[in-house]
Amino acid sequence: MRNLLRNSMLILMAAQLVLTGCSRQTVYSHYENIGTEGWERRDSVAYVVPVRKGGTFEEEVGIRSTRIYPYMNIALIVSQEAQPSGAHRQDTVYMNLTDEKGHGEGEGVSYRQLTAPVSRIQLQDGDTLRVSIRHYMHRENLPGIKDVGFSMTRADEG
Image 1 (cartoon, rainbow, N blue to C red):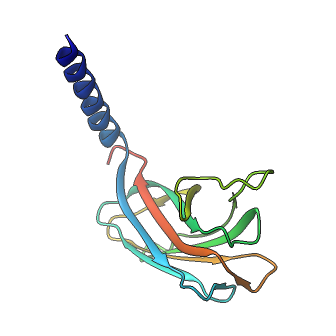
Image 2 (tube, rainbow, N blue to C red; image 1 turned 60 degrees about the vertical axis):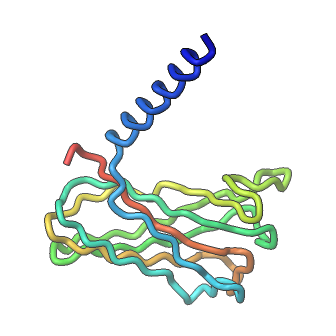
């Protein structure tokens, strides 16, 4: 009986993974290391995303931070330009890295990882999306930001 229950649970989890994998196809996901000296406001993090098949895509930014980050939240400017279609946009993304009690949001132990949606974007076949992310905080240098990431998933059937 225990084996039947265990096997049933394994089959259910495998089916859930397959169904989840079919509903959202990740086309791009990458983190860039910021370095130990902190993230300067003038330093942007850049990503180049080739798009073979056009469609509608959902975008997310990710932050990995340590306990020495001095604020509860972070504001990011996400600039995008697609070539050759010419699509472009700029979004401001706000992320709460800690709650009101100072407890870290997100997942992780030695550093916390948190993601936030950016936008939905329509891209054409053969576009190359150039993404630039920089912080928009009052402090010139932000300590405690370990990595900044960008990811795209296909929102349409594609």
